[in-house]
Amino acid sequence: MGLNSITKWLDQCHFGDCRDTMRAMIADGVKVQTIVTSPPYWGGLRDYGHEAQLGLERDPAEYVRVLVETFRLARDLLAEDGTFWLNVGDVYAASGKGGGGNRGDRAAWSTIKERKGFRMPPAGYKMKDLTLVAFQLADGLRRDGWYLRQTVIWKKPAAVEPMRLDRPATSHEYLFLFSKSEMYRAHNPGHKWWGHSVWEIGSDSDGSHPAAMPSELPERCILATTEHSHIVFDPFLGSGTVAASAQKLDRSWIGCELNEKYEPLQRDRLRQPGLQLEVA
Image 1: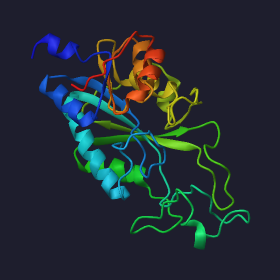
Image 2: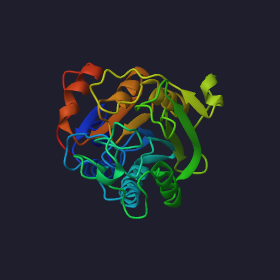
Image 3: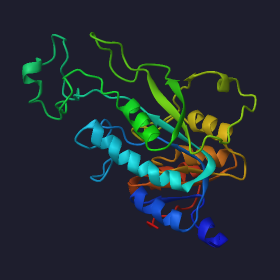
């Protein structure tokens, strides 16, 4: 493939279904060095405002199946010595929207399912079960051929949900490091955080995106597994955090995003006059 067929993808967000976009990139011979992404979590935990968004599957098993197939395409885009950083959080089997729990000022469990927005647990799960869907996804990817190299705990500075009486609050997410091959590009450029399995990173989100990751998170991933000539890819670009981090570190980047409403946020963060709006 010619150079022009690859450069047309660079430093742009391509809006539409990332699976269609990735197939077109594969046909053009595009290769990326690292993938850094945070897909929508299962169960509609965060609403991205699009009827075709991932995360609305009927149960965790279906969610895992869809994402394993999606990231199989991403693996075809990855260089043989490339890496894949996956940020994903765990969720509970039943949605807490609308109240519930064992507090006296909330509705009893016998009536909570009638409250607006409440999600009953899928088959095989009980009302208060933690699904472990993050680990189900990691294991599904490992079984599909990825090398699962490490689980990093991203420790947030404060709980991200109201305090509960019957369990500790959630104040962390998981960052899984995968590689395409047994031998892959990763190095320790003298960063102290590379020697720790737990990363404590504060949020720098302005609230414009419901699930924006802090910029330091992708920066660490990019620094550890790429060089200046490499391409960084995010199939779920959202507000553009990974692209902005890649640009800051003088790397080329490619993004995919389903929802075009994030284009102004991306343009503002990247300080560009415009971004690609057509599905390739």
